[in-house]
Length: 261
Image (cartoon, rainbow, N blue to C red; front, side):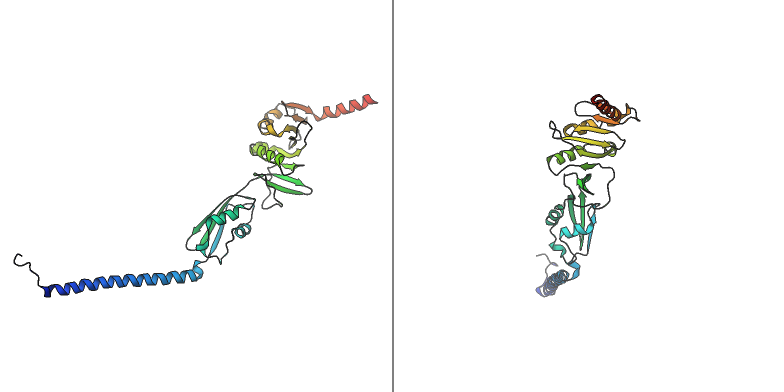
């Protein structure tokens, strides 16, 4: 070795001891940190901090917040780490009013449930009650939330294929047409199982078959614009577009009675 670069063993020993001491101290600090972290985790899981503190519900209009939370199966005693989002979504989706649900966990202990509801497409007349009909064909057993005023009332319908077809047709209608319809009566004929009679807010009636209702009723504003607004009657949309005034119908019946006499 070159002169001046030789380090004696006596000089190296203190440096080696210092390096070992620093290494030991780092290891000890690491172990102590891990130990305290484990203690904090145990304390957290055993304390109320790990329990659900707040449950927020967003997007509900028809169904109550309480009903959604009850269906979710989450309480303030639930450990936030035990909340299975897929399971909660599945349970909430069993509610007939719920179309879609999402669940988010905002740590440390808040739950946010967002839902999208099925729209009320009509009301079913059952005696003195009006039962909401949803856009999936479901009929609710009672009215929840606010009443929707711009949808028609269905009469003589029962749950099944005819009602499902009716709902499908209503979903295709623009708000302008829905607002014009007061009631829809199921009035089947021997030749047409899907025949319906629509009672319009302007006093006219519409005779139609469900298979073509949506495609034809959209021309209703154009049809009535060509008629005398003081004369009300039946607009037959089953085949083409034929208008028969109520007065002419009454007159025809009176003439028939007079002839019989």
